[in-house]
Structures are given as structure tokens and as C-alpha cells.
Length: 201
Image 1 (cartoon, rainbow, N blue to C red):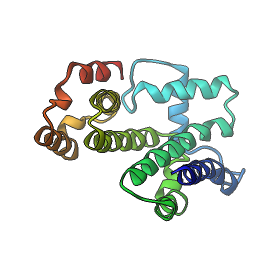
Image 2: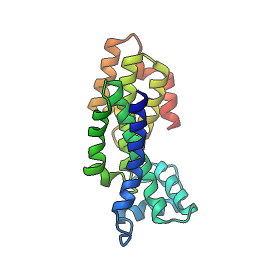
Image 3: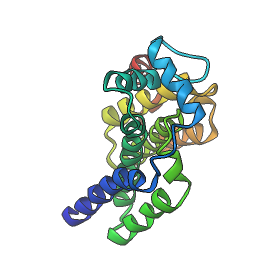
Image 4: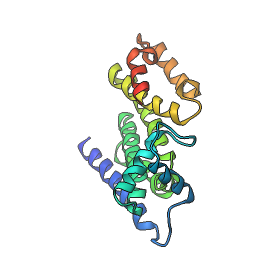
């Protein structure tokens, strides 16, 4: 597990660095990125297009000078974090180094290379969906209700604010919660802790 973890974090670091090396300096931010960056000048509890989280990162980008490095850093960090969480899922299901390398390929050669380099709502959304999947898997494996409830509650709170339909109206989410109810004695997604976390998010 030690060597596997080192490989996981090394690949996550590469995920942050490689897109910077591939993009030519002649390109400016995407037109949608300008919209989300402008929202950093008008912080609010939410916008028509995005939840407030993205505007906070836009505000930080302006605070640090508004350079292209900072614009691209936040989606790159979400991409690396998504890869780490996905890697933890692979490890929890028995995957080793080769499985992690296969997991890394779409982050470098697939659509995730672009998705996690644009300052848009998509990087955090994919990250939080991945966190929900990881929380459900770890709960099934460990029965650690508190940790899994907190993670899923926070993730659901974000997605309910971002997506018109939250996890409760999403078939994978409903199926996961129903499976947990059938296989455990816990009313997992109906606990007060879950709703507190949704409210915080």
C-alpha cells in the first residue's frame, strides 16, 4: 500500500503540472472563464449559473493578481483531488499500481485533461460526485456512518446548489441509498447529521 500511495500522489502531482506544459502561452482564458472570473468581483450566496464556491476561487484569483497560472490552478487542483479520490476507490477495491496507471490515462489523454484545466463549474462537480461514490463505497466496506454521512452530506449540499436536481432526484444516488438501507440497519441518508452537512454546504 505504501508504494501504491506514493505512485498515486506522484501521478496526482503530474496531473497538476502537465497541462501547464501543454498549453501555449498565446491562448487567453476561455470566454466562459471570463464570466466566472467576473463573478469574483460580486461575491454572493449563489448565481444563476454556478454555486458561490466558484466565485470564491475567482475572488482569490483576483487577490493573487489574476494571472493565468492562478486561473488554471483551481481546476487543476480539483483534477488532482478527483484523481486521488478515484485512486482511493481503486485501492479499496483491490487495485494496485497497474490499475492506478490505467486510471491516470483519461486524466492525461482523455476529456478530463481539458475539463480539469478550465475555470468552470465542472471540475468541482465531478470531484464532489466522485466523493459521493467514495463515501458510499467506504461506508459499505467499513460501516463508518459518521464519516460517510458527513462526506455525502457536504457533497449533496454542493450538488443541490449547483444542479437543479440533487442526489435525491438522481437515480444513482437513490439506488445507492436504497442499497445501504437494505444491507445495513442504519437509515443512512435520513440522519440529522446528513442534513446538517447539507445545510453547511
